[in-house]
Length: 188
Image (cartoon, rainbow, N blue to C red; front, side, top):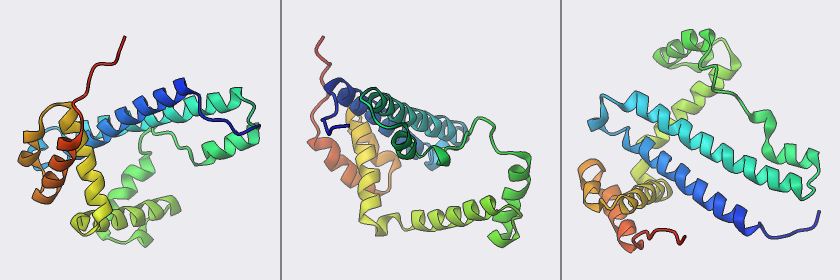
């Protein structure tokens, strides 16, 4: 298989789908705000799964193009990381549903019976600690501000940023939104 550039139609589709996934990710963040107490569970799950599905579509489109242009099946399977794919359709199993709260309540992953649960618990604790230090990590601050700034510009609602974001994130998101062009309709 020779090295070639990504086909233009695929490039445009990837850009569109990634933008859609980013919007969904921003909404996940938005629904974690305190003023969303009545909808956070439903909407964070909706938008997180929407983002995951959209990114899965990106991977599928790219894989179809690679397959059509002659990529070896072994390479394609390796690049798709098929062995890491887990279906969320079944939801948390009975063991997970029964054991997960116990792990969190005890604060000790060693008390969880399943190795996968111990790993998830440990990763969850680490991510929770890192999330508490958001303002200490410039990359996370910038990423969150970019998501909010992009969304504010797309919705033409930059002023709303101050109502639900921490001041540092709102300030940076406002700067990002202000330098973006106002979206124009696609030519037909």
